[in-house]
Length: 59
Image (cartoon, rainbow, N blue to C red):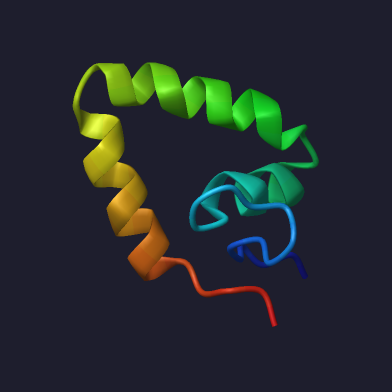
């Protein structure tokens, strides 16, 4: 069973994008680019902070 975790080793800030990339088996760089586009609208920063708080760190 797959679980979503913040990445411990493939991270730049909190590991949210790295964890999402690992979960969906996608390159985390693509997730980071999409997140940067979302952050340009203003809501991406808030969503990232909430995700960093809610998603647990990889054991």
